[in-house]
Image 1 (cartoon, rainbow, N blue to C red):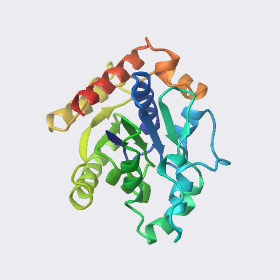
Image 2 (cartoon, rainbow, N blue to C red; image 1 turned 45 degrees about the vertical axis):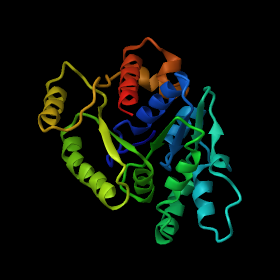
Image 3 (tube, helix red, strand yellow; image 1 turned 30 degrees about the horizontal axis):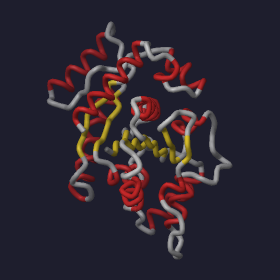
Image 4 (cartoon, helix red, strand yellow; image 1 turned 120 degrees about the horizontal axis):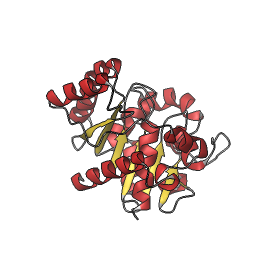
Length: 257
């Protein structure tokens, strides 16, 4: 199963959700790949413990080779590295992704990621794609390559307003490029159950019939510690409330897959 974690708004927890769901998949024995398409490289930093400016193996190298006229001499797996966690591999981000984007758009390389991930399907049980906070070439490539779309929602009114445009964009990709893409659900992140506004906003989404997933992910200082240590929650504190919520969310997705 191939999931894209997508929201055009920044700071909603895309990388955190991507990396932690992937770490849980791997921890449960599933062969798991994370593809980090955000030039900021937050998932890459989270899973490898540092940025990859000097790395030769990366998503940037993969896309760069698609621009060459010569036949590709590498397989998709050659752009993947191991992480410190068993069963968990990564196609790292790289800052060069930013400058490659205009060339990739002009040459219409929008289906190359889909082809690569289909090539990797026999090697991995779960693939998670982290995306930039924009509807750009890399995000569209990810939506075309994925089967399920997870939408982080961080419980503020701006996020709610943007959600409808986001869903329209996903539907357009479904119609024009990827009929197999489904909205797997809206992941409520940084939820504070004692505050009125988050409860109200989430209930309004539910009342409108939108696919809000449960459990909601709690707001916790622990996740910042997890980022700082480059250690997903399942490896840092398996009994923590947030870890248990992430596991429940992961298992819910597994039942629907």
